[in-house]
Image (cartoon, rainbow, N blue to C red; front, side, top):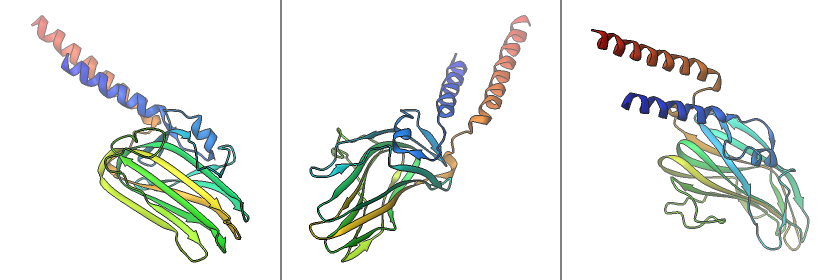
Length: 235
């Protein structure tokens, strides 16, 4: 009975992993449509994408116009979010969304690609990460060990990349807030922002193509165990 319970658990876990196909280029809306099953990029599974309410005074970008492209390596999977959004004086645009990441995760990094700003324009990419737990509600609050990397660009200076590290955990709850603010007298442009996670290579998810072979092997072991028990009983 114990052996059967263990095998059932393994089959269930492998079946769940197999549901997450590889991440492919698409829009934020297509990633939202993946639901809880999500997709696999390297050693991480991304899922549960959903847009959330943004800041007052900002125009929220439709998830259909935000492009998403997976990248990085197996141990450092990444998602690049392309906005190609500009704001003139008085203009404010934002894309804010939430997702989960599972794997053996140790850090999160957010970076900006080709931002520009004049006068008092500002480009921001804020990454709120809750390792091993969920944020309390629909905003990034209530996490016991929250990390908040921030990448920024303005006419006075820049920090194009920022990271937060954590003890190894199997789950991240993530908020991403990308904003382009033209200021009162300036302008700002953001081409894209990339979120990169560090994941241990030893925690790789079995490829869906390998699943039938693994299940066949497990079925063979079950048949062998039953045959051995029957032989013992007959003796």
